[in-house]
Each structure stands twice: as structure tokens, then as C-alpha cells.
Image (cartoon, rainbow, N blue to C red):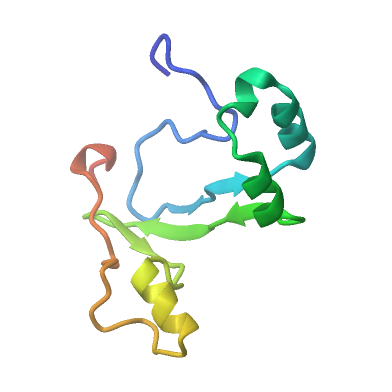
Length: 120
């Protein structure tokens, strides 16, 4: 990592991608109750939180993680995880509509920037 850039234990990808590599990307947003309680009690943090909404909406909900598997291709990636992702796709599926949508606004495969791919 460049000097001054924080290092995150979970963000370990610091190398070129090579055609045929398979990767798992696992972004998540977690609601850890004892940390939230501490934030509610800390005046400096609490001013950024809407406590009554967080308490009522999160309940016992722990968070969300979206896991994607992808393979690196010569021109980008091929997404192997085929699930609804966009608001349009999720709303269509929740209403009983078909998936994948013929006019999806989430193109698969998606090209990757050329500067992260190693020569094949």
C-alpha cells in the first residue's frame, strides 16, 4: 500500500489479475449491537445516528453480505453469481417476474479496466 493509505485486514487484493483466476468478493454491512450501543452512548458518534430508526428497523437483523464469484477473462471478468442485483431486477423478481431480465441494466460479463489485468 502507498504511504498514508490505511491497511484493511479484509482487503487483501494487491496483485495483478491473471486470466483464469477465480475470485470471491464479499462486501458486507453489519450491525453489531454492542458496537451500536457504544455509539449511541458516545455523544460524538451519536450525533450521526438516528437512534430510534436504527433500533426499530434493525431489531435482531445482523446485516447483509453479498457474495460474488467471478473468473478473470482476457477482457475483464465473467460474473459467475447469477442473482438479481439492481432495484429493477429485485423488484421484478419480488413481484413474481422473470429473471434474468432481457433488458437488465446490469451487464454480465462486465469489462474490467485494462490496467488491472496481467498480459495473457
